[in-house]
Image 1 (cartoon, rainbow, N blue to C red):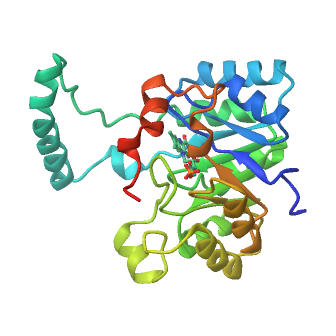
Image 2 (cartoon, protein in one colour):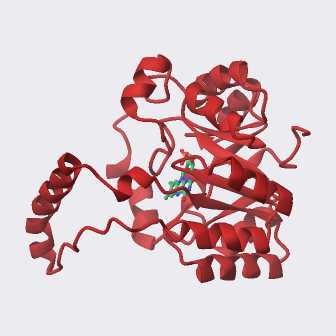
Length: 273
Ligand SMILES: Cc1cc2nc3c(=O)[nH]c(=O)nc-3n(C[C@H](O)[C@H](O)[C@H](O)COP(=O)(O)O)c2cc1C
């Protein structure tokens, strides 16, 4: 596969929770970049509605899907106890704001099967995954439907596992990335097998260099790319493009809440210089 699958060096990161709206990816497209919609936390119907809107606006875009972790749906007794303890610790805050801490919900797979079925029936150009690998069958099915498939990885070991499933490209996410880490291999394993994992000091470009030397797939660098210098650094390290999140959060077109946008611009949220 050609490494020029993105047609741009700037990818607007999928940002679930309201940021990556169809208007947002359309604005990115019109500015010459490539945006990803975010299916995370959405129903199948809401994901499909986003696809229809972005298409109607003439945007080129991808879709990002969360991979559920089956182990989370059947937690051990020890993990259940930890979760209950955490719920108990949240109660004073909940009381303060007059809300209830909801019961544990263990059967939530974020509508995994429905989303994959919908993307097979109504394919989009690119599908990326976070928090896990979709499995070879899903990768093949989406490729057969015409989609380019990307997996998000945070270590060389995860990159090798993803490549083994036949994905077309990797999003290489460093610990400096905004939002939550997409790491999916257990921390103990990461620590043992990958002394240079994404949670060690270093930069996105350094992680890209390590993954580049281990895997031949096209790479998208994610994590703290905020300007031209950041982009140049990850391209020089071997990435085809950068996936930029936080830098786009405060744009007019971003669907992030105003509170979130204001907090990012507030001096108290900046590191002391
Ligand atoms: C608010 C927010 C939500 C995010 N949601 C997702 C998501 O749904 N799927 C995903 O793969 N990555 C998600 N990410 C991570 C981004 O895809 C990307 O890796 C990260 O933003 C890059 O780092 P940067 O924010 O420093 O540019 C999110 C990031 C942020 C800031």
